[in-house]
Length: 78
Image (cartoon, rainbow, N blue to C red; front, side):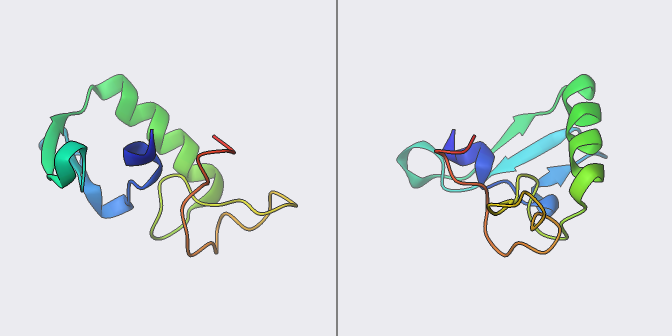
């Protein structure tokens, strides 16, 4: 789960339909196929907060900090 929470906008390659997973199992990077339906869902989610760095940003206690958050969502909040 931590791999997904740390996804950054730049990790999504919509052109090639791939996700760049950084520091995955064994601390290795890998490219993972990205289904078009998943890309659509991720885009809809991102459009709600538009954080320039994180796909899943930390929202804060008031759930309003997502657009400006400088860290990813906590695993305990996912």
